[in-house]
Length: 188
Image (cartoon, rainbow, N blue to C red):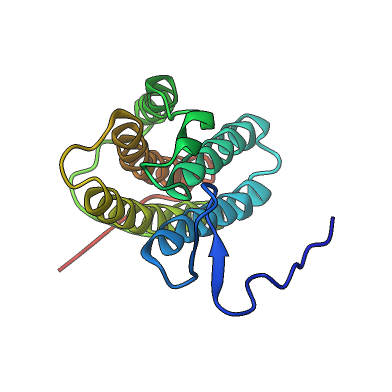
């Protein structure tokens, strides 16, 4: 299979549902940001290579993001949604359990902290901010395309992204802790 087809040379691309739309469309922008987040998680995993458990966790999240991206790359009214795997409450609980596990090891926060510290923490903070952007764009896209009621698959996707940003924040703090770097509180 060739990597280039030439079909997008005039600024159009195909959605998973088969529709051809502008590459500048909000739908492309939303799942493009998910792709960016997924790549950042890959960079984070590369820096965590010696921590097999964390890498496996991140690879599961990367897989979940591809699943979520398929939903954002499909028109809600398309029959193609029938072939998509929904983001489940189990995937959300996976993130919540990881958050709870990491938080047990971390000192309580009493102030805002500056993003950074160890390189792994810095990558996790970067992923967190891109995740928040993904969430904002997904909310906008979903609420505009489903004017009346957001259906369950899309609601789960939004919850997953919200929880993922929390997970990435706690993971950043965990990365600093295991490398002996204290969180830097923000000072006015």
